[in-house]
Amino acid sequence: MWIALNTILSKEIRRFMRIWQQTLLPPAITMTLYFIIFGNLIGQRIGEMGGHSYMAFIVPGLIMMSVINNAYANVSSSFFSNKFQRSVEEMLVAPLPGWVILLGFVAGGVARGLCVGVIVTIVALFFTDLHLHSFWITTLTVLLSSVLFSLGGFINALYANKFDDISIIPTFVLTPLSYLGGVFYSISLLPESWQLVSAFNPVLYMVNAFRYGILGVTDVNLALCFGILLVMIALLSFISLRLLAKGKGIRH
Image (cartoon, rainbow, N blue to C red; front, side, top):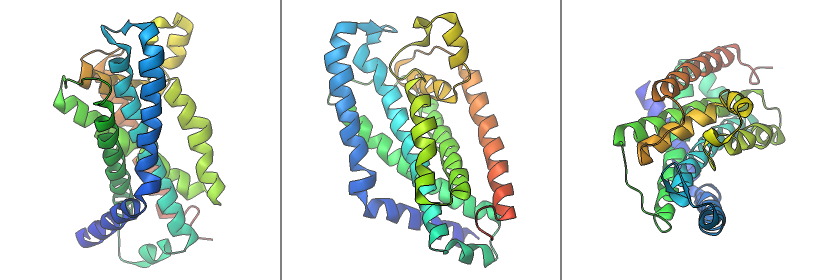
């Protein structure tokens, strides 16, 4: 069982490391452009936000945005490729419990998310100084967030019938949630009605918990952040295992 888990995980890591030009390099270039445009050019006009320079304020959000997008993309593309090539059927006929398959792919997504997070953090250090406020909150937030979006990518891959289907959620759901999740602003600047709408955005809690871990400032209660993350992880894990057991999108 553990041999199978290690095999799936090592395969996933080798996969995204082998095509690093497509998986690790683009996020670094994209975030560099964000830092230059939003941080340097626009940030100089905005000044401080939350008691920090605008550049320092947006860095945690941009790191978190890159982590969740890549964790999601890794699992959705990898598992769907296994479906498309029918190699996933070999795992299903093997004496493997569903949670081993799920954990292997999710761990692969977490690994890619963490690698991209480290790369983006290194890039950010060229633009601003980062002083870690709480190592444990920062680490726990990035791990839970990457697990959550890896599970989301797994569910997306199960329902997808063609390669175009795995790009629908990132385009029409993840991108709007990221931009409206307090990455570039404090929600305290919003009218009360929009603050209420933002409260239903899960990315808001991840960004703010991560921002607290780095800068020590947050717009929302930390206990609420971790509570929402844990509940959503439990819910998506249950859904993923149920769908996998039923063979959704796999058995025809």
